[in-house]
Length: 116
Length: 114
Image (cartoon, rainbow over all chains, first blue to last red):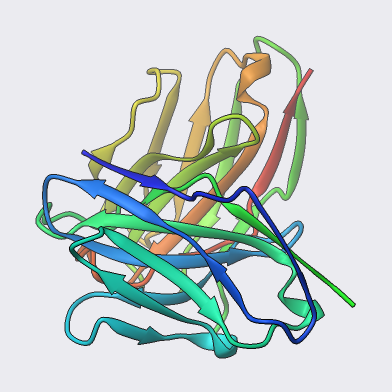
């Protein structure tokens, strides 16, 4: 079984400032890692994913994340946020070895609030 | 290419009733997963279908069921509704059964049980 911990439920930040949203996971098997964003009254949109290879992953909208196996972390970063980045962000994992289609285990989410 | 569509978008039901939600995946996608999102429990996996077969199931009571048709469209049914079933139900489709494939989410169906 896997679990995902998002350490911050809310992160307030000023526009054009950098931001980091933290995610730690626990799993007895190898996992794939994902970050999703949810805007109000919408479904989830994939920001980026880590499957293998380079531990620094670049995604859409200027976001990037770094996989740290020793610390079992997958923190999301953006060097300069915009008002439009205000949304809920979810970290998720899926079991690499299950052989079935994606069954995602999500964290509880981090609300990013960008203000002027 | 059209995205994942879910119908209806909003639904109000009374305790004890049953409800059926529908999900049409992206054309060509054969895997469909369902998730329940609530403020208290967050996002929880309900079940996953691939080629009309349920391949995985989350920890939900038997009142929650689903099925997938030959055209990959999927429905989920909740019988004997309880107040705690009020939630946003999200459907996601994926090209393949592999867990490495990206899931594309629909906008969800907001179910309110009164």
